[in-house]
Image (cartoon, rainbow, N blue to C red; front, top):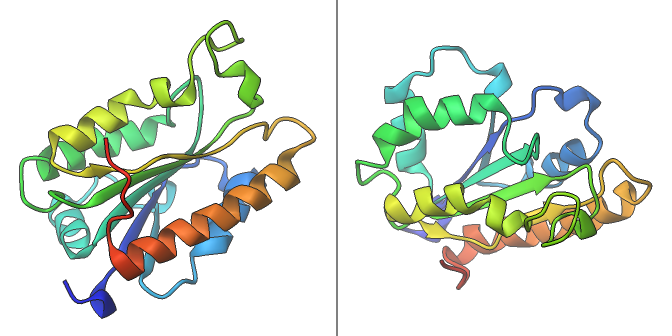
Amino acid sequence: MNKDLRKVVIILAHPKMKDSRANRMLIDTVKDIDGVSVFNLYEEELPFNVDEWTRTISDASAVVYQFPFYWLSAPSLLKKWQDEVFTYLSQTPAVAGKPLLVVTTTGSNAEAYRSGGKNCFTVDELLRPYQSSAIHSGMVWQTPIVVYGTGTGDIAKNAAEASNLYRQKIESLLNSGHTGDSW
């Protein structure tokens, strides 16, 4: 694929986006980059149009899931999208070989996401179903970007650092495709 034609599709799943500081900061950092298309699932028509999504994802060179961590997972509408759309896409060439990046925010600080911590597991461990889906469908799993502590006083600093990393990652995906990350 010609790098001038590269596109990154961001699938945003946040039921209260207008109230979110961290997710808004993250998406505001990348939404205006040439080649980036943002689809807020909470603004999409239901039921999901599988044919339309197939065209959108087929035309993309990378896919991003951006969501807040709710009860140690994504909001339910992303799961619905995966069940209705991604299940079909995973059986087609539409996603094969494309990077999948997860960008997520947590209310708790990083110390809560470890063995012995409040949540018992690392975010990487809790994201294994997404990694497994990527591998199963032939996608290239990317190292997730996690903003910890959005429910603490560190939100501005943590979100700003992650926003810079997010922008760099998106630009890298647009300019060179794979970044060397994989499963």
